[in-house]
Amino acid sequence: MSSVSINQRQTQFTTIVRERAVDYLALAKPRIAVMAMAAVAVGYLIGSRTEFEVLRLLSACAGIFCVAVSCSLLNQWFEQDTDQKMVRTADRPLAAGRVSSGGILLVGLVLASTGVTWLWLTTNLLTSVLSAATIAVYVCVYTPMKRVSSVCTTVGAIPGAIPPVLGWVAAGGQLDEGAMALFLLLFAWQFPHFLAIATIHHEDYERAGLKMLPRVAGKSVAGYLSVAYACVLIPISLMLWEQGVVGIPYLVVSIIGGVCYLAFSVRFLLEQSIGRARTVLLCSIVYLPAVLLTMTFDYFRLLS
Picture 1 (cartoon, rainbow, N blue to C red):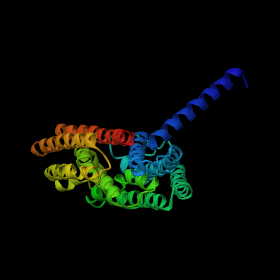
Picture 2 (picture 1 turned 90 degrees about the vertical axis):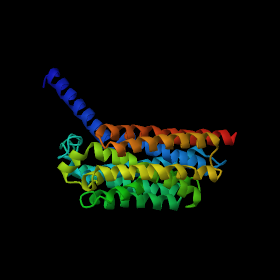
Picture 3 (picture 1 turned 60 degrees about the vertical axis):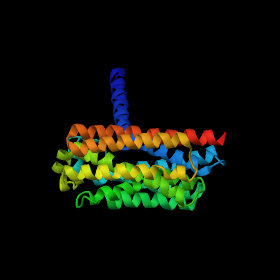
Picture 4 (picture 1 turned 135 degrees about the horizontal axis):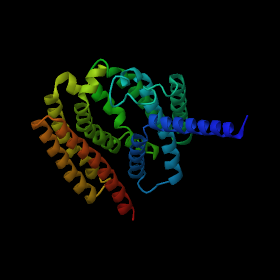
């Protein structure tokens, strides 16, 4: 075999490996995983009070990261047929057939069991149990429910609100008022966010037969619910301040951010267009990082 032929085979092999690596990275949904880890870290910080341990946080994040990625993989494994019908998801590696369906299922199950076991052995039992429950609700309840009921949005918001709670209990906290405040904050935040996404992509969801709320109940219902949850988000966001967990900077940012979120939601209600839905979505992805960053700032400010 000539050296040219060998080089060509090596080049082809390298290209295939690179493409598959990119595909697996896309399946892991790294942006969502990073945001989840940020929420875990903030929950851990404010839950640890003055007993912050970097190695313990990194260990917890490693296990929870495995759980988060397993949820993404298993969700896409279940939804590969509907993903093929939607424009925005048709080119996902599984839907497009670029990766093995059985291989993704295996990796997802291995990551799920590894993450839950790791948290049990290195963090604590409560974090492990909550992580296992998150996988069960997200993969086994929320994912199939999208095909049969618009209640899926509410169910999906439960595992979506868990990351900071996992950080809180990983730091040694219990399912107390602080954990509840963190959970409710992310739970309420998600509704305008996901209803905006469902409105923007309502044609895709209709094509795939998924029962997302704007498609089933109409955009006006999505608008009213967005306003309702944006309203309750403001007092919910104050719970952590009332508990003395955070300080004035968080109070200011949460109120200003909450009022802006509400204003954009009201505009979406009054004009139920894709353009207005996009402004709600943009506001949502600014609000959450701003609140989490301010929590972190408050933690180190109060610690000093």
